[in-house]
Length: 314
Image 1 (tube, rainbow, N blue to C red):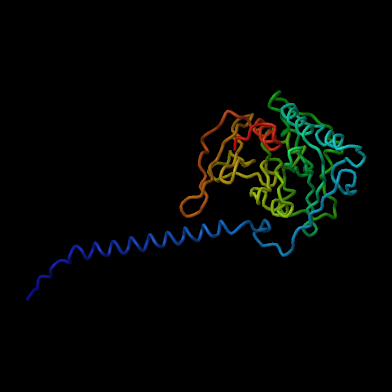
Image 2: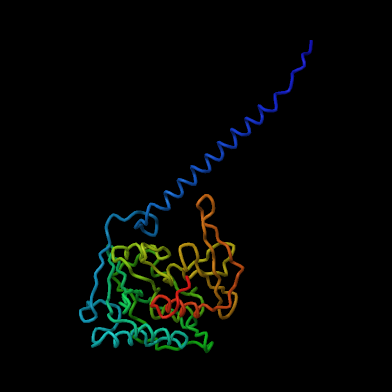
């Protein structure tokens, strides 16, 4: 005898769906809370490979008249900070000439800083500005190809003396063990950025000397106001494998970076929104939004903003 079974009460399935939806929402919420806790835990001083440091970097400040012999800039015999800055910026391109002059006007004290972590040393110049702000620039690498030193204003290569001590000043001694990734080949520098990297291998703001070590090891991050806004060579990278023609070279704020579009002879800027998605993972948007601003124009504007010579727009 076949007994016909009555279908379940519709309210039963409705209840099951509600339970499943609530469980999924709770799981998503817990994942979101976990990601927020991780992001708000504060900056960690980590090595490039992701291992936490077991020692704090040694940060030493030197006034211009007391710099050590191994300082990479040839400013030991300069009799004033202005003369020292003239030496550092003597190879400036026409597009950066105006902002470099403004930087020299606004600097009241120049300091040399060494950031030592184990055997590796980063050398910085710190520009103490008359408004109390401090801007740092890292010592440039050697071997930047002349093909990368194209000024956008003239669209011509900026010629230099290859035997100049300024070109050779960042060459490490044979006994100096470079930090992993620091002296990587620089052949892929976007055109025109070489005009910056011949002067400084990146520029940023200094708020707390205690966070300089972290900023050197993680140059794309900001640590309590200390960090790069114009990235050093080692931090140049494509934001995505799907956009190999883009190279990020600067940051605007916590979630926005700037990339150079290498598809044109004079690269233009692309602003990329890296706002994390719901799960906390970064998402890159805006890769198709090419601006009219060229890379070197953005570099000049950023330096102006760092030194307070223009209205801040980020």
